[in-house]
Image 1 (cartoon, rainbow, N blue to C red):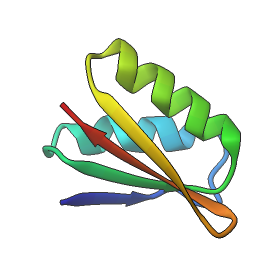
Image 2: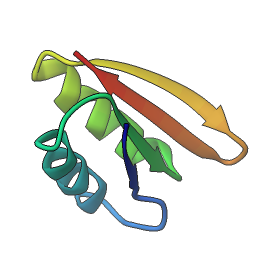
Image 3: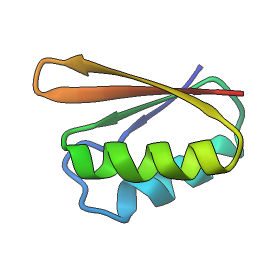
Length: 67
């Protein structure tokens, strides 16, 4: 499973990191620390035909992207 730790990065960097990691395969787990990248990554992935599951891990968010 691929993992991207985008915590501490400002948008659009988490989205850019996610797009690059998607080329390496699925499933992909993306860790972020605010709702802005959650919304941006979810919108991008959904529009590209992926499924996204989000769960809170303390103050962070874990997005799991699958086909």
